[in-house]
Each structure stands twice: as C-alpha cells, then as structure tokens.
Length: 131
Image (cartoon, rainbow, N blue to C red; front, top):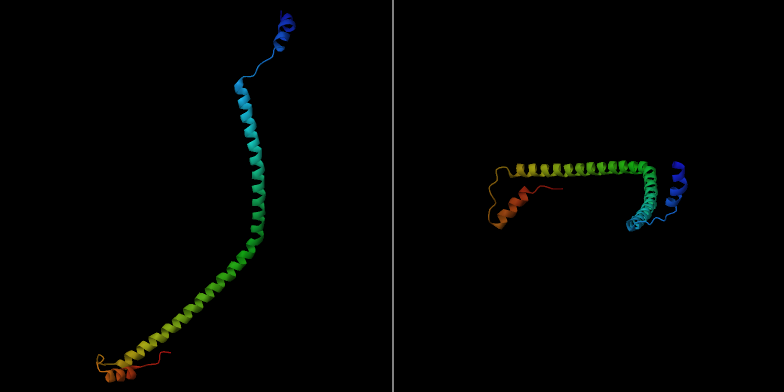
C-alpha cells in the first residue's frame, strides 16, 4: 500500500503548480527594501567608525601636547593673576598711606569754610602727595 502511494499519488501531487498568495509578493518586496536599507546603513556605519577611529587617533596623538600647553597656559595665568594682585595690593597700600597722612594733617580741623581764599588755604595745607 505504501509503495502504491509513493508511485502513484506522490508524483501527481508534486507535479502540481502552486500559486503564491498575493501577500507573499508584498512581504518579499518589503524584505528586499529592508535588506537594501540595512546594507546602506552598514556602509554608513562603517564610514562613521572609520571617522571616529581617525578622531581617536588624533586625540591620542595630540592629547599629551594639549595637556602640556594647558599647564603652561595655566601657569602663565596664575603668574599674571599673582602679579596683578601684587600691583593692586601695592596701590592699596599707597592709598592707605595717603589716607593716613590726610587724617593726620587734618587733625582737629573744622569743616571747610565758604570763602574761596580760606578754602584754598585749607586744601593747600592738607595736600599730601598721592603718587
């Protein structure tokens, strides 16, 4: 019985033409689109990876230089700030000395008078060199 089935029925069934469903063609087209897009994305990602590799190599090469330059710049900035602070503190000391000298010269002076001659006399008597 099995032999008869293999020789008669099976060959007839395998000789039939099968028609594909219409959805199958749509699915195949979509899969082709997806495959094409995937291949394009793979190529693009490879380009980006190469670019990143170049950037990393440049960074690795230039990093020690930039660190050295940054430390030199930092040291120069610190020195400039320190010098400016010294200059300002020197000017402040001069100003404090001047204020002290004016206070001493004023002593127990009275408020300025309204007459110009008296006013000029008081200004001249209290004048202390600023610089």
